[in-house]
Image (cartoon, rainbow, N blue to C red; front, side, top):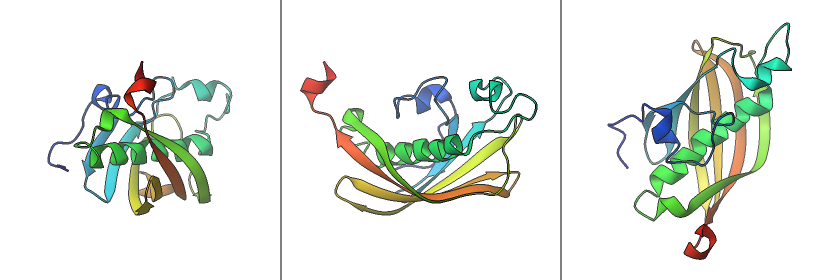
Length: 156
């Protein structure tokens, strides 16, 4: 796994995970290794969730902050498996534990997500993630995901 070349464009991130606008919550990947990954999401007032959460005081829903960390973790899984037919991998969030929301995320913020693989056993991976805005902790959570390997017949 090579972390010398950051993944700078959302189009490159979209090659790793199936999420698309308006649900793609990783803009770029700054660095990664076999155990961790650091990703960025720039939050703008144009995010569709701000229309209803909340119109007079827009705040990114906490569940979407955790989802953003889970998408970053999915990128880590695919990058770790890049020489093992990663095009046929899907990663599904299974469980969220100990989610804590420390600081609201609002339009104009840039989220730096740091995810670490705590352990993996077979196709079940456990992660710990933190999200920061301006070096202040905004959210942290432990979560688990299942890696599903699609066979060729499912791709048709």
